[in-house]
Image (cartoon, rainbow, N blue to C red; front, side):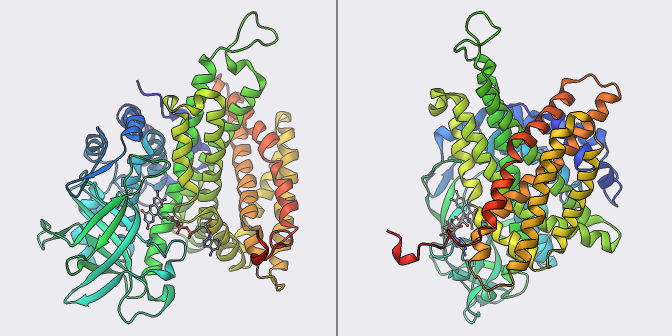
Amino acid sequence: MSDYQAPLKEMQFVINELASLDKIASLPGFEEATPDTVEAILEQAAVLANEVFSPINQSGDEAGTRIENAAVVSPDGFADAYKQFVENGWQSISQSPDFGGQGLPYLVHSAVAEMWSSSNIALALCPLLTSGAIEAISQHASAEIQSRYLEKMVSGEWSGTMNLTEPQAGTDLAAVKTRAVPEQDYYRITGQKIFITWGEHEMSQNIAHLVLARLPDAPEGVKGISLFVVPKYLVNEDGTLGERNDLKVVSLESKLGIHASPTCVMSYGDAGGAIGYLVGQENNGLACMFTMMNHARLEVGMQGVGLSERAYQRALAYAQERVQGNTHGHKGKVTIIHHADVRRMLMQMRALAEASRALAYVAACEYDLAHRSEDDSEKARHQRRIDLLTPVAKAWSTEMSQEVTTLGVQVHGGMGFIEETGAAQYMRDARILTIYEGTTGIQAMDLIGRKLLRDKGMAMAELLSDLNSFNLELDSANEELKTVASHFGTALKVLQQVTDWFLEAAADDDPDLAGSIAVNYLMLTGNVVCAWLMGKAAIAARQHLDAGADDIFYRNKISTAIFFADHILPRSIGLGDTILTGSNSVMSIDVESFK
Ligand SMILES: Cc1cc2nc3c(=O)[nH]c(=O)nc-3n(C[C@H](O)[C@H](O)[C@H](O)COP(=O)(O)OP(=O)(O)OC[C@H]3O[C@@H](n4cnc5c(N)ncnc54)[C@H](O)[C@@H]3O)c2cc1C
């Protein structure tokens, strides 16, 4: 029996009430995304997630992966689960019909992706990377490469990877050394890549590796990197598979979590050079890479949502079963959910899971609006919003998944520390989320540098204006949301104040200021944006109740929003105070004095 059940009602609520499915369904090409169709799609996905992906999550973690005869062996059941995923068309759900995709909104893909990450994050990483590679090829590759690769990748018959990292080039991709030497209509690629997720496996028929490399005469730094598609098997003109390319997995990393996802050291060109094809222009790999990374950042944010949800479900089930101690008003021993402190932990878990879901789905909605709005100024406004929200959705949700999955262990007491319950696995699996696709620190620098300073606060001012309108709406909301209104007003003032302060202070000559405050600023932004969305959810839930709905779901939505405002949102005051101290105490011990 699977212990994960996709929270369909909650997902549909967020899609309809917060992520404005109706607005998206009115965009050209998305007419079929009606609430009924989306509901049916989510129900179908839930069957695969609950019944196929989830039951092999823990056994996959225990078995891990290994190399046998130069091939990676996946845990039992993974190849079959992936086959079902492909046969049911899940890879293609939001991909372009031009290459066999179903052309549904990214929002629908995102909700479905939450289920894959909740039910089996290690397996879900394989299609996640394929989607990023599809995005890069669709936007930057030549028509010939697109026609050769995209259809098979969109169907999932071929998978994709991202090959950025090298031993000396992690965050600092300017240090990439892998070489690409032009030859006929292709390039010879040589070098080593590390940490490549699903870099080798037998679940798909071919693997399209997207590899960052440097031409012999390339300029130094990021201006000299180019992107190549380097297939595991060369692809003949008629699309059939040819010879094996000159690349191989050298070893697999032994790691803290996501054990069932092979993290590969890849070697390119040991026998003279792997054949690769340029994607985009020479020396313009950075732009192509950002296409892949921005996409993957939203997807990793969704992984945070998925693991928070699953950890919450597990903790709740345990708290409802485990009998321990007494409490007022009950004769005899009680289950631990009766204890106020356990209830606090469960409320914190559900509030953070719901808030990060709301943020992720609203970001997905902005993505759709930015891509499909017909009016140019609308399009640009949504693009500014998704650009602003991407680092927040990635970093806030994944940071919060650390808190949620740790609380999940805590709710289990000693059994949380024992692998059998699964709670420890969610905590271990979540740990990578704040690191790959750019660490939280890097997301925060993106927010404060590229997204706040570069446009002189324009995108943030638009967001603050929406938050201020909501603040006024809260004032006239139902009495039960009084506490939400008061905490929200205070936190919003803090965000406004530190934003204004930073935009002014940035002009001063403190090169350490941005780096010193960035993560706290991102977390503050996430808190306030999520409080906004939780508040909107509470207002929508109240409307359902007032219209006669008699459903505990809506009452719980309101209670959870109030809990978020009471327990999570006040952290904003501390974050604001810390931000205003600037770089003073952060930089107070110089590098040589750290002993
Ligand atoms: C399980 C796993 C799977 C992965 N999958 C892939 C994959 O499929 N493809 C791929 O290409 N890579 C992959 N990676 C690599 C991953 O993206 C990098 O680990 C990550 O980008 C961080 O780089 P690094 O490990 O070199 O850390 P470093 O860059 O050494 O960073 C160490 C610390 O210093 C900080 N830091 C570094 N530079 C700066 C700076 N300029 N300003 C402020 N702080 C800074 C970082 O925030 C971090 O806290 C994977 C890694 C793991 C562990």
